[in-house]
Image (cartoon, rainbow, N blue to C red):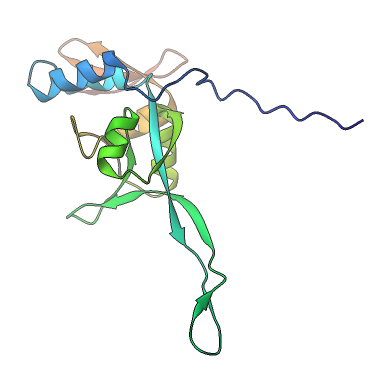
Length: 175
């Protein structure tokens, strides 16, 4: 009798790839100037995002006639380089936004905090959400670090702060 292998549930059972309507509404309100950046970020912080992976050509062997054969490929996340030279990891709120960017991208569902950690691990300065729309949203600097750490953003007076799980707050971010 063989042993059974159990694949753990990644936490997205039943996910059809649609964007969360609450996240979409918060991002749209921010884009229209009806909400603060921190409000949009707060909606995003607990969201499922889709990080695309794409096939990239690996090694190619050539025969004596110079014809290519035995190609290999790898799957990789996508980093976009801005005009200022900084890198951003791409993420999407749903499959429609991902497909609008690149129909060949394969969605990997992750929590926003996981996407932010991946961005930092890849040396990116930002997490770029929905680069092809409907609302482009950038998380960078202290916000990227707070999101990656799993901290919660909260209103503090006229500004906001990242609150660590132990209840301590980080520096206040005025927005």
